[in-house]
Length: 129
Picture 1 (cartoon, rainbow, N blue to C red):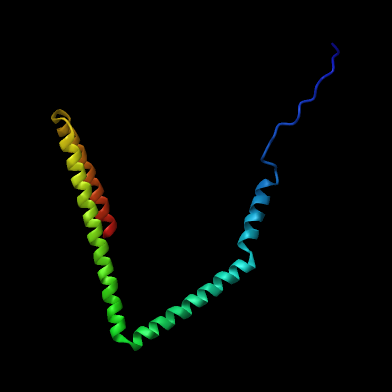
Picture 2: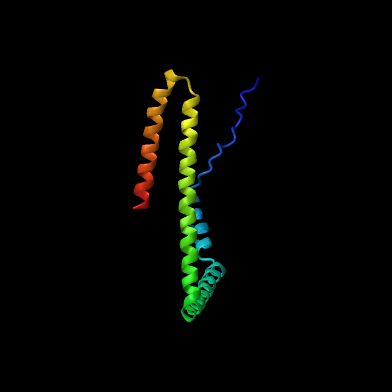
């Protein structure tokens, strides 16, 4: 066997010295796409015009404005009632699950469920304030 040395192919190295600059330039090019900026600006102008038109319409028709406020209030109230019902169903499901567990395990699980509900309700209250 001859002493021919095989050359190994260079290791694949994905990070070339110019890669961070290339990535930065590609990202900057995406940020500076004028057609996207123009589209967003036009969209904002259209939204402002629609908003002003709707505000004027509501100002000109106080009954409509009142009815809209009442409709939104009713929607928010319905959502609150829905969330309250979901909490109640969750609590009842937990009670059902605990009732189905053998008595020797029930007390430990009950304290864990109470702790979990307390923690979750505390987070809900904190977020709502």
